[in-house]
Length: 441
Image 1 (cartoon, rainbow, N blue to C red):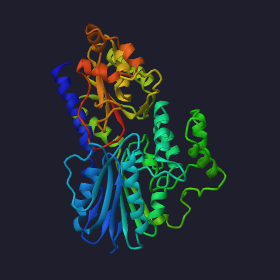
Image 2 (image 1 turned 180 degrees about the vertical axis):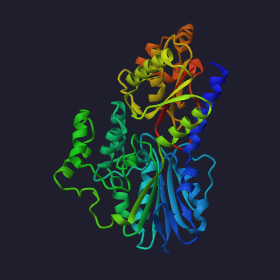
Image 3 (image 1 turned 135 degrees about the vertical axis):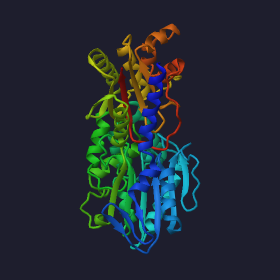
Image 4 (image 1 turned 30 degrees about the vertical axis):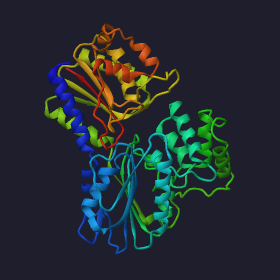
């Protein structure tokens, strides 16, 4: 790779991540004068306790920002983060608990039980300040009815294996849970609730981010059951899940809060960072350095291999027609159907997208594609994606690697690691979906 392009690529990645750094995002969103807390037009001037609760990959820096701002005014707090996502954060008033992601574990279950108890203790003059970011659904399991943690673990693994998008996964999760689908906010009543959200879902629908902990639930038990049928999982999941969803369909389980409840005016939710924020930073940097920017407004969604091939072809077309250095920019989240995966395979949607793009770019000079998971983690790999260019496939074959076999086996990380083109930056402590950055020069 050209040294100047490599340097520019690193600058683009750094600018994207800096724009959605959680600590700064929270501090920008909040204003505290010692007696009154403001978030945009919302304000709270109560004299009760401030209880900080949350979950997600960005939880540690979000909590650090809140402690920096509110200090001793915080009565208690508990935030659940993914393993290895504490960073160097040290807190005095908020506990940080680690748990497993994407499959929930006993630590997450225990933390959810503690959060549930704290919510139930909140009083009229209290404020529950919720810090929510990507990964919260798995990190905060509170199985409903007779559903066990093992049942939720199996459900999660089945949904991930079949390539279900996060919106579908979270629709099912929330209807098997005691906190999700607005129930977190309901349990906090009669307290005020302010939720600060870093969005990891395409389009930022609040009902899907973290399975809608503190917003009205627009879904239903019938829709959740239909989703099981759509993926033909109704006879593979545990009987407890089938029974609970069917009881909900018959009205034997209370419906989730839907926005009609009289207490919703006490609940405020604000998105403080999203994929578009990162995209804007990339665009600004590129234009400042003289690059033409083609900014794709539609999010990238669908099967990673299909999307990657399409993007590779798109860059080939640009390489043939562009009259000046051009950057193609898009964001979103693809999926991977794990059919054909091998026991040794390591990869993720970004590495797989990049490999499919590399096949389409083969032989194309002066073009490159960056596929980046903004949280620093891509599927089962330790990387956050990969950088593909027109020479990647030739380089691989010179090493005796067959790209199609790696793609078929969903072993994309091993492929990019061998080429030295995996993006390995470690946990970023943020999460706003994925970015695709194409360069033609």
